[in-house]
Amino acid sequence: MDLLAVRPQSNGSVIGWHVEVQISFRPIGFIGKLGKDSGSTPSSARKRTPEEIESCARRWVEAKFRGPDKKRLREQLWPGVNWEFHLAHAVVREPRELEVFASEGVILHPFHEILSNLAKRKAHSFSGSAGGDLAEIVSYYKSHKDPAE
Image (cartoon, rainbow, N blue to C red; front, side, top):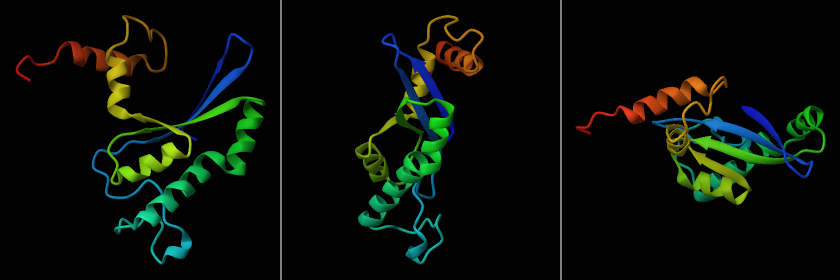
C-alpha cells in the first residue's frame, strides 16, 4: 500500500482511497507480474499475449487491492470505510494493462495530470502540508518557463 487516505463526508460517512503508485518514464517491463505457471520469471519483460496481459493485470489488482491481507489491514485502520482503488502512473509499456485496471474499478491518475493540477494550485493552498514543497516547485516551474519553449 503506497498511500491510504480518508475523508469524512458531510453525511457522516467516510470515503477512503487506497492508492498504488507505479511511476516509470522508460518502462521495460509490465506492471502485472507473470504467474508461477508461466515458465518465465514473474517480472519477465518478454512479449505477452493479450490473454496474458489481461490475466496478469487482473491478478495485480487482486494482489494490490482486494487480497485478504489488504482488506484486513484497511478494516483494522478504519472500520466501515468505503474504499476506492487508485493507481498513479506515468508511462506504461502496455496500455492494455491500464484498460484492464480501469475495467476492474481502479481509478487511474496519469502523472502528467497530477503535476498539471499541482501547477494550477492557488497561492498557499498547500501551506504546511506534506505536498507543499513539491507543489511549490511545480508551480514555480510552470510560472517561470523559458519563453523560447
